Image (cartoon, rainbow, N blue to C red; front, side, top):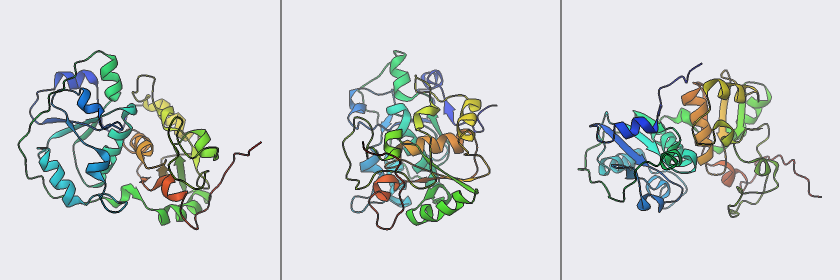
Length: 286
């Protein structure tokens, strides 16, 4: 089977369309300094924290602020927006989900991300592109793409009844409660380890090849259906702050065409600190 949606472009396609009118590249990295060391010609930078997060409370900027951001980047209605970044496109997928949540259209990911582009020896530049500011059209959110804490708590019963699925895309040690952070990452202030009851542990990286590209549709279908995550179910994905779960959300909704997939952006940094939220922990200290 093929991917359900045409939402990926290859590094070859990007190289051939660098100067194409109406094609815009956006780089979104975990390492916000990486862009300045070299990026694809014509790509603009988005800082996922500074640009997408509200500066005062833990929440995203609103559609109006995003509209202003896209206008400042010189984007126009109808532009083909191609996202890419480091970490096998974690943060590019996060941006894809956030932009989709706010109603932005014509989005694609460069398959393999920055990792593949660099591995192929393709050219990078430190020249910052300049685009004339635009008036980007008004945006409207699609709340069917986002899950909130109380909705996740209610979803536990949906999972138990067989009508839903929960996908924890973190590492097995995070899922078990042995650690509260990713390998080689610092502790992030989460008080409790473990996972949301009923969640299936399907680490995000199982959906990718060594070069950062996505596995075939048949391989992805077998991966998720083998863990009971089927298209007929209402699915919620989560990780720690939704960057890795955005990658899995992209696989399930955009590549496999699952009709009901939400991303829980509060994820474990909210759930593991919240009062009254149930937690399962399978790790037993010796």
